[in-house]
Amino acid sequence: MADIRAPMEPFRIKTVEPLRPVTRGERESLLKQSGFNVFGIPAEKVTIDLLTDSGTSAMSDDQWAGLLSGDESYAGARNFYHLEESVRSIFGFSHVIPTHQGRAAERVLFGAMVAKGDTVPNNIHFDTTRANVEVLGAQAVDLAAAEAYDPDTDLPFKGDMDVAKLKKLIDKRGRERIPLVMMTVTNNSGGGQPVSLKNIKEVSEVCAHHGIPFYFDACRFAENAWFIKKREKGYAKKSVLEIAQEMFSYADGATMSGKKDALVNIGGFVTFDDDALAEKVKNLLILSEGFPTYGGLAGRDLEAMARGLKEVLDEDYLDYRTGQVAFLGALLDQAGVPVLKPFGGHAVYILADRFLPHIRRAQYPGWALTVALYREYGIRAVEIGGVMFGQKTGKGRAEVYPELEMVRLAIPRRVYTASHLRYVAEALIDLYKNRDKVRGLRIVRESPFLRHFTARLEEI
Ligand SMILES: Cc1ncc(COP(=O)(O)O)c(C=O)c1O
Image (cartoon, rainbow, N blue to C red):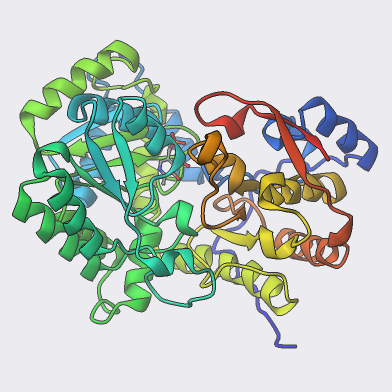
């Protein structure tokens, strides 16, 4: 067995948060109460929480210090100008409009750009992005290259968009029905896989040719830029900041959930150059988020985001960050646990249908794995499969499932140490040996949008 080394944490720990023991019996009854939905479990009853890397980062001492400099004026708080400066220095667009998180940025941007009957392409839409397109009566189309759906192809840029598919879609739908093209970096729903600069340039050229605005869903832009530096020819000597600036130079704007690569617990923004669009977006923002210099955030939150955006570009941090993901992935892979390859930027993805081959797709193997992981080891993970993305569009409204049935182990930034990750690996390896005991589930209650958050299920 190869010796798998953990990356050293490039920080030391100044404040700690205890992990309290939870018995298996407690976990069992909590599962029943929550309708076998780990979103319904109180976080204090979770030992290792890998539900998401979103909003779960540990902030630095500098960010915490920034909170005390929060200017809580209604309009024109100084922290807004700090955020504006940070965003402009990386993204390069003139308008910086804060929102309380990423989906609010999507909502105000799409609300101003997208109409009923339109089509919005993306490499793969994240669930909130898809929902924010669909709620407007438009169609969200995923255009990732075929390899993105093959969990075994070890390619450096599996997040790339298929440019031929994009051209075909534009020809079919017509430019006037495509208000914008989105590109998600890294491609979360496709395994946290990066997009190459080559692909970004090509997509940008197609969009420019047809006069279609090109936007990034930029939540994990720094992780994406790091992979470009490590994997794409010609970028090894460029700084991550320079690479990020180049990425954004090919686009017309971006939405951003600061809860990922801005290293904050809440916050987001939308940024672009178009003045007329800014007016529309700000009008929508005022309706639901607030005045354009705070967008639903306290001044202190704006400050933390302004500082986090700069911190995330630290290359020792990004090396460790992606190293942690690779470390957990390698421990699992070496033990034969089926995982998506290559390992992405923020999470390890288990191939749940291979992990639990005795559970049919209609009984949600990914969901079953999340239930078993919590029940047996107190680990919370998220299903990215049939419950999250299943659609009743088949014959007789039968459910159609996404190509990949996965469980995502998302690693919060700067929160867990190598020994926490070893515990997770050992738990999964142990569960894999006892996989025959895991049971499938059926849905007993669901909502029409984003059903995974609130669905109730029962075991079969
Ligand atoms: C790719 C992507 N886009 C958008 C979002 C939405 O961001 P938020 O949770 O801040 O609303 C997320 C959140 O996980 C995401 O991963």
